[in-house]
Length: 131
Image (cartoon, rainbow, N blue to C red):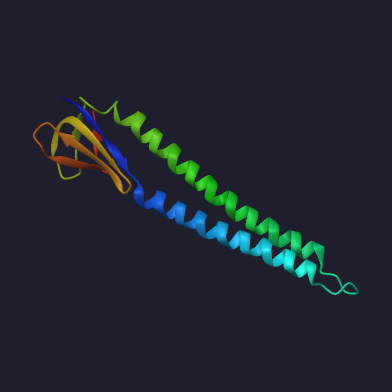
């Protein structure tokens, strides 16, 4: 029986969620502060609108970067799954010389382990040969 284990990328997902949560709080706090400043500004010396827009744009760029990272993580996960199926049944030789037919593929956030028919595993990385 051949299996492909699920991805364990809870660490990166949790980090993205935490970053997005912190950013949302900071972004909302910034908007609230900016509106309060505008309400209470001196009419004879108004705030510099260019500086306000630059700050708003910076927050927006950070928010977009976090969203992009989250989407890239998802894309890499999907790519790993699509490639994993093609490895089953092939022969893998590790950097240490261990060799065997691949029975399963386990994908984790920090790497991929090739499960061999004899029960051993090979960490997929530099020096691993798949034929």
